[in-house]
Length: 173
Image (cartoon, rainbow, N blue to C red; front, side, top):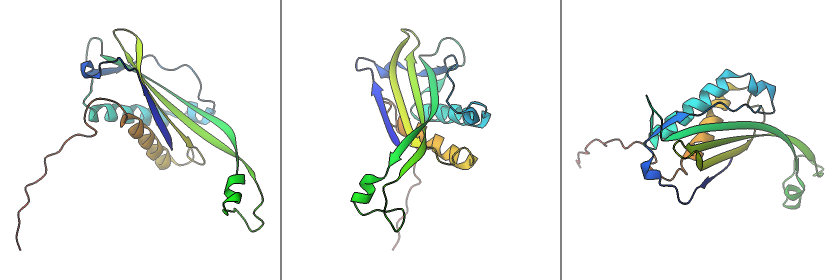
């Protein structure tokens, strides 16, 4: 999975404490299977909310949140040529021919917008091959959690995860 992010350099992330969802993205994903799948949307929303909570942000219960969240998912087809694999001795079969393979690629983009200024302050994105993911809800959930978790690990403020006190260790030999 390819994961990256962009931060608005002058943004003061210490002042963001709450979040809320911005208007839904009206753009289709490029795959009707995903557009009609409420499981996908529920898991994205849940993963983002859990990830932001782990980074120290809370969902706004009233009023204007500090950050508005938007996400967009897309699925596209791309061609993968295994020529480099062949040159390095990795082959798909005995004759080791160069092959062109059509691959479904999914991209998830997560935007955090300063609700006061309406400026994008942080964007994360993850791209991964999408082979057979839609047919397996457990794999879809794992991929969503990995994508969102990887993106939010790059969020510039807050702890990486909630700190839990460790039980005292007793020694004995």
